[in-house]
Image (cartoon, rainbow, N blue to C red):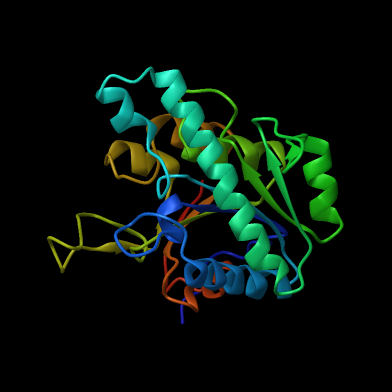
Length: 242
């Protein structure tokens, strides 16, 4: 089995879409999905890695479609930020049921339900073996949760961002339309830009490139793939690293 270059992933940031928590129809919060995510986090935690999580809010609210229908974009985006806090609290509950102390921090202050995001406090939680869920985006409208993941990963000195998707890595073409499309085992950041491959939004991906932040794209719904990828198994996912 081919192995990627040896990398020590001491601290990871897991980026999840809000749809990862969604029930039937792609909306709401499904407790079974939350339990599945918590189990995958538990497996990584048991490897001795520090885990931070950024989760979107698309299962509860989407700002861009509302803005296209006439809602003020800032208002729509702030509602989306609050949705990510709701998802973070649901995920915190599921993870703590497995015996892992978890903290939710948010860039949108709501002190009665979550801690405010403070970079050094987040790092301290991770060093103490707590999972940290970083919600509320970056606290400003017009930025996606991909951008929040890229920024927070850099701020907390994560070793890698794991982009959880429904597809086993980055492909040369849409594998749903072209079943024979090539899956890349490894790419450079510039390769992704040159080939216009869809990994993150441009703002988020450029931030990762500028900070030389590795990204692993994988199918989160294959239960074993997360651990395999973090252990360097190149048969799953795509590693983007310079």
